[in-house]
Image (cartoon, rainbow, N blue to C red):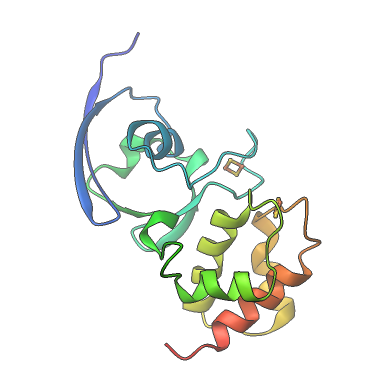
Length: 156
Ligand code: FES
Ligand code: FES
């Protein structure tokens, strides 16, 4: 049993101060301590991308970083976007273009889509390349790429 250590972290604009195990992963902090279960765990090899969140405005795999490394930092999860009654534009684009089936990979892919738009990537082959850290076992990716293309063409 390790001694717990103090962590101060902002998640979806809310500051949390917690005592955590030093070995706690960011994804487990998000899901188990903060109950934000929209961020998924789909592998134990850092390959699937279903755990992707923003850390200080940059996309990261939250299963591959210790929570304590995020001390003083700011995290954004899928819950910070729209909800069922008021979808964010990226969520609407996935709905309209059938960009999901079971939906397990979708939170991570949506966070990646935000990063794609932020990086001004428009070409289909570049979108596909950017998605190489996100695995989807259902869709065959075509409608995911279509959804992202439609979202990045939106005028904010
Ligand atoms: S759970 Fe993080 S990459 Fe699969
Ligand atoms: S929609 Fe099922 S894994 Fe992607």
